[in-house]
Amino acid sequence: MTAVADLMDYAEVVERFDPVLGLEVHVELSTDTKMFCGCPNLFGGEPNTHVCPTCLGLPGALPVVNGKAVESAIRIGLALNCEIAEWCRFARKNYFYPDMPKNFQTSQYDEPIAFNGHLDVVLDDGEVVRVDIERAHMEEDTGKSLHVGGATGRIHGAEHSLLDYNRAGVPLIEIVTKPIVGMGARAPEVARAYVTALRDLLRAMDVSDVRMDQGSLRCDANVSLMPKGGSEFGTRTETKNVNSLRSVERAVRYEMTRQAAILAEGGTITQETRHFQEADGSTSPGRTKETAEDYRYFPEPDLVPIAPSRAWVEQLRATIPELPWERRKRIQAEWNLTDEELRDLVNTGAADLVAATVDAGAEPGEARSWWVQYLTQQANAREVELADLPIAPAQVARVIALVNSGELTNKLAREVVQGVLAGEGEPDEVVEKRGLKVVSDDSALLAAVDEALAAQPDVADKIRGGKVQAAGAIVGAVMKATKGQADAKRVRELILERVGA
Ligand SMILES: [Zn+2]
Image (cartoon, rainbow, N blue to C red):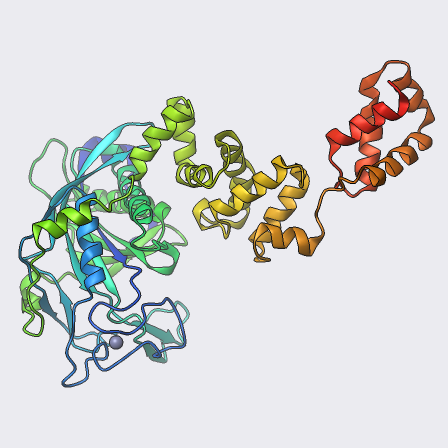
């Protein structure tokens, strides 16, 4: 076990070594059905209820490729500026693992559907880094093992294991970068920014729900070091299934400091997979890494090759929506934002949400203010990403519309948002259920105004004497009496009318 003391100080690491990264991202597609059978593609469910002879690997069951998944793979390839293969095949990747009932994974090997692309990634300070994409290929997900009885949920120390094949055969796209070199101290940040950009892209294309917490987007981070100024890559490790954006950055950084400490003492790096430990940000050894030869790949005999016509590829190219970075450029111009304002919007994860709220009819300034302020606070309090808050841009737009029409005050609007976040339904339903309508009936308001004026005659005199700003105290009293459900602007007008000021 590597203790914390065996890490090299980060500043020294980047002074002595150049990091080389390779990122492999697995994306579960949100198709209706699995990759090679008609089973529903749904997260969770009672174990082993979304299964059939094909995804259970029973004798005689034959696979059929999911056309929608091929379509998504091509669209993803195009959005990543890849070439699309004119002809490609699936292969069998042979290995035994209990959560893979066929004893092989149907994947693509030397004939990926998309290859040779790139993704431009914006770092926190606005610098743009181009990450080259080696390939994007289709494959299927495995089932899940549940190890029971151990302290950590890992197989070590477990009393027995349970298997759930609901996820077996879910369509996956694996996106592999070319080696990312020359990033120096910024390598961990580049890794996070790349996965973030990829997530935003896939979300905008509506091909996956990209929930890292549910495993529908997972990152394997390959890290190696070479001596400063060197050109020959060192031995790499592969930290598997890192499941949050922040963890991607931490895992890369940790591996750099761990490997540097070993290399500095003349040691060698073991080529292996490693596990990331969320609790302390360290990695621990997994299995010694197999080579491609170990898997005995061969072309899948039960599936026909895929030969997407160029006409179809062009049709699919036309379906790619405005990409997140294009949209950002457009909104910056349309909303007149400085580079810094745009960056804040992007870094809080709000840019696309604000844009979608504007698309749903809200005014940009109001949409921005809701997402960047109140909703960001709510996300922080719940320790979730802004986009994972259970409220949709259209719902935020509706709340804004209710405020603008005078049906809600800002305070009531926040209560409505709380209701939506608590799962009480659409904004209008929350207004109804919680009784949050503004009291706009003048006669009801006048009664409250008269009562407040009578209770504070000295204030009433001041207003009458021309000290209009004193009306604030009466407005406050009326708001209190109506439990905040009055329109403060209208209350002020009524007060001034009443005292004849
Ligand atoms: Zn099935």
